[in-house]
Every structure is written in C-alpha cells, then in structure tokens.
Image 1 (tube, helix red, strand yellow):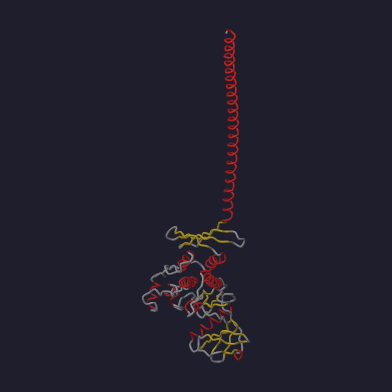
Image 2 (tube, one colour):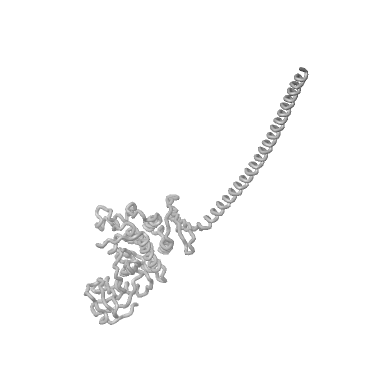
Length: 396
C-alpha cells in the first residue's frame, strides 16, 4: 500500500471533484494528484483497487505512485507528474505534431513492455482500459507510461462486468465472457491501429459516436479498415494489428511476444522486405535486421491463427560472405583461365611470327637464289653474245 502522507503537505493548484486529476506541489516537487470522492461504493472500490495495484507495481513504463492522503472528505492519490500530456492529446490536440513510424513503434513497444510486465506478475494484472487517454508522454514525448488503474483487476477475477472504454473493448468483454490478458492485447491492437492511422477507432461507421453501433460492429466482427494506415507502415505492423484484433482471443499473440517483436523491430532499425500469405491461417513476414555487431540478419516470422507464432533468423553476413567468396573464387578462376588463354594466344602468336619469319626468310633466300641464277644466266648469255661479236670482228 502507498505510504500515507499528511494532506497539509499537499498544495493543490486547483480544487477538483472526484475522479479528477490535478497538479499539485508536494515536498517542493510538482506532482499529479487524483481525487477520489467516496460518495459511491463503486468509486470507493475503484480507488482502493487503483491504489493497491499502483502501490505494488514498479516498472519504468507505469506511472509511479508517491503516496496517498486524505482530508477527511476525499482521498488523494499522489503520482509523478508527466508534463507532456497524454498520447490522446498528442494525436488529436490542436498542434497536430508530426511523428515517424519509428516513434509510433517506440510508444507501442513501451506500452507492450508495461503490459507484459503486468501480465507476468506473481498475481497477474489485467489493465482493462488500454487507450491513448491512459498513456502519458514525457521526456520530450520520447517515453510513455501507463496510468489509470481504476479498472485493473488480477486474473483471479476474470469475469467481465462491461467495464472499460467501448471503442477499445474486446468482443468477449462486451459479451460478458471471461476477461483475460488477451482483452488487453485486443485493446493494444486498437491503439496500434490508431497510431498508424491517427484516426479514432470506428470513425468509419455511419454514426461513429453511437455507442450501440460501435458495440454491434465489435461483436459482429467488423474489422477496422487497413487501407487508411500510413503509407510507410511496415507490413509486419499491419499483420500484428490484425493478429491482435482476431475475434478469437486464443489466436492473439501474448504481450511478451508483442514486446519481443516490436523490440527487435525498433532496435534494429529494420527495413521490411515483403509479406507472403502461405495459407488461410499462416502469413510469413520477412524482415532484415542489423544486430549489435553490425551483422545483417534476415528474420522470418510465421504468424499463425491457430498456433503460436514462429520466428526464424538467418545470418545474412555469413551467407553473403560465402556468396562473395564463391564470386571471388569464380573471378579468380576466370582470371586464371583468361591469363592462361592469353599466354597460349601469345605463344601461338610467337610461333606464328616465327613461322612467318621463317617462311619470309626462306622465301627471301629462294628469291635471292633465283635472282642470282637469273643474273648468272644473264651474264653467261651476255658473255656468249660478246664472244660471238668479237669472233665476227676477227674473221673480218
């Protein structure tokens, strides 16, 4: 139980009614104070439940309780103050700040971490009211914390009493069936869709504010439109949304599985490659990651409706190194072959040149011999002709 503090030490900025959250000062620090008016038994039970649960929780992504106080008329829960407001205010406030897919995945991851922690406690806790209004931002909107545990319950009490916010409620919770951790998973899926669309759930209905129409859509299995998600939303996130929103709670992933998937997706800075439906119940999502050593890894997630998801990882670096080694080997072999071929060609050219030179030399020799014989013959004929001329002159 949260420690009891003297209400005189709590300086409320503005007075508030039951259920209101107000800024205050306590021990020279700015805090948030939730005010409980115990006029109704239900409110009293909710307050006791919230104080009990928050007092037992210690997680970086859950609002921290500083203590509790009372002035005799009302009770007060003292909590840390997160000045950046709620995720709902960020998404739909007047400023409309832009945000990246990476930031959306970071928020979703922190929510998944908080839920996985709650669901894994010795006495597991189901939040039962997961929505952007109950997610507070701080540290320049980098970090997210869950708050408002007024409807939270441990899993020993799993009977739904239709508590929660209708837009984010699982079909089985509306039908007053068992309320399990998979109801929180369904609500998480709605929030993840909301982060990737920046639209209120079921705003596509003809009467988006009609509670009966929303209830009818949820219980009859009307799906949230996936064609309105932002264009840079990874295929794996789209598939995760659809798995979380499966009408059969047994087919939804656990928050631990969601935390693991989103953690690897966010921390690795993955680039989604492709998604491949294998059959009606199984989809393969292929993504590429970089681990802490800088090595690339190909991850294949098999999302299965009937069974637990399967994850397989393959070291891309080793395979690429082997492929590169083979390519280098082939290049070396090609170079060797080309070198040998070039040497053989050069040798052939040398032999051809030698033969050509030999032929030219032989031809020149033959030509010289012919010319010599011809010149000798010509000289012989000229000599005979000269002798005859001399003989004629002597006879005269």
